Image 1 (spheres, rainbow, N blue to C red):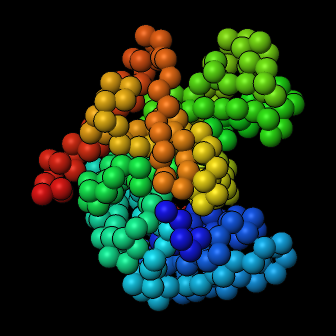
Image 2 (image 1 turned 60 degrees about the horizontal axis):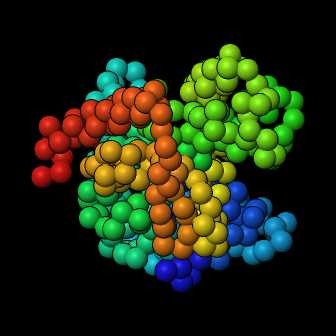
Image 3 (image 1 turned 60 degrees about the vertical axis):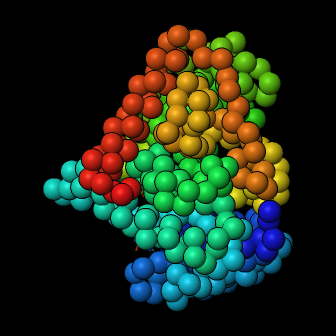
Length: 315
Ligand code: APR
């Protein structure tokens, strides 16, 4: 249950700070505490964001934690800590490095915010969410991966660009893994309550699927680093849904237990977000083609999980 409207953000890099800024502008939280392992990062950003709140309509206390122990009694802890893939690192190297970071961060959360809901953001998203679920052993409603909220916003952007209208009224759902086998569902989207298939051709929708999948890479192509405003805003939206008990339906990576025919894996599916975290998993009817795509997506995530298992990570 939500007590203090206090949110911890572990990893005050580009994404963590953007989430904090977005939350501070909206005045969603009573308190936000930032922590980063790199000296000065959380402190500097906390001061900057705190000063920005002067123009917010609702106050938010923004602080920097000196140590993980200061991220305490949070209702929600967002994990954006991790390292990006560098030079000669294989995907497997990156997976092991980030899993170790996530493990130590998660153990601190269990100690200092034992009742929190954890919002997992670090990549590879679905495998890291699974890692958190395994390490905590908490009820699955308290471990939520942020991916579909971002990928959905990226698909909505592509739909708006294609149509030239529909701002803020585009429903856009993306399920599956947060990677190359994600499944954007324009055929199930609508614009101001009008079904998208009534507005766009099959070819247009195919293009939207490809552009959505390529949404992150497109930004990297321009910036040479991944996006952060979109992820930050998506995190803030999910935090708001939980703190305000809004029961919003948002695609999120959660531990499946038979839903969609899969178990022991975290992957993106539509869920109801409220003050208990994931309050329900929404099961849609998927036709045979989509079922196949979903199974492939699950397989990719399981391959990542197997790397951790084969390295005895969970023993
Ligand atoms: N504890 C706290 N902070 C840590 C730790 C740790 N153990 N290890 C790394 N960090 C911090 C880094 O110091 C850095 O400031 O995590 C931050 C990550 O920030 P960026 O490198 O700017 O990365 P960002 O773009 O914010 O992405 C963060 O979110 O979307 C995902 O793929 C992305 O996994 C990545 C994460």
